[in-house]
Image 1 (cartoon, rainbow over the protein chains, first blue to last red):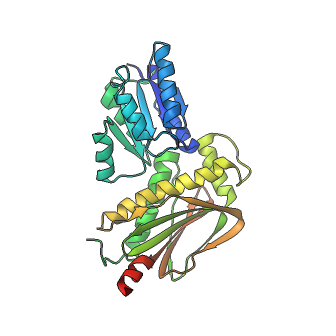
Image 2: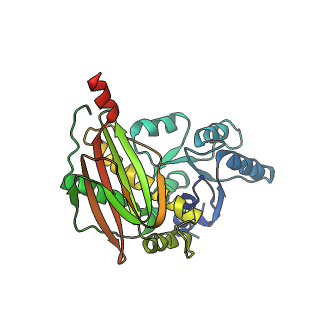
Length: 136
Length: 173
């Protein structure tokens, strides 16, 4: 899978974090990036995408958000037959092991601790799409 | 493990603060800020046009971290992220940006301090705005301040540490 065909959903209530993640993804060759400001909005986007016969290839989600948090979104995704295999990466400012363990126990496929670099994101994505995923 | 452990305001802590800023700026913004010195005092004071405030606390200690930016500096930083010019510190994106930067920097600082055996928890960030304002903590046993420079623009980071009032009350009871 080439990087320019990967479709990413970023979920964060902070516009600045969404922008920084989007810039980092663009920097490694990923151009298809959708954004949601909370779990509920993300859930709607995921369902809408499924209705159109496609789906996101990976979801980056913040943990603490209004309306529907990252944990609830994670549970929804992992409980949905058509979405459960989509890599879900929890984005957090907490680097403590207990916090990371909680995310992994809840079904997160990986985690990203802020501050993140484009290189780190690339490394995380290579885990799911292989290092053969090249910028198109 | 953390009880009665003393958080020394020294060169090592200055390095923790400096690392928190450098790691955040370099990895997320592609900027390399540097701080040539640090100052230790009894009162905390931070001046700027916009300040991010984050509290760190554990059983016996309370700490407050102030990150103050002149408008020119924060507008430059945010332009790197958003790709657009900012002209007002009252812009919601500027306020949110300072809060999130303060949050991320303190996440790194907290991790580095806790690696020494402390158990600090981090509070939610607050932001104070106002041209050439000064933020002063009401009381502080000690503080450490680091002036930073990035692309010829300035900002500062100040950490104050006090004994927790709650632990003082517990001890008195």
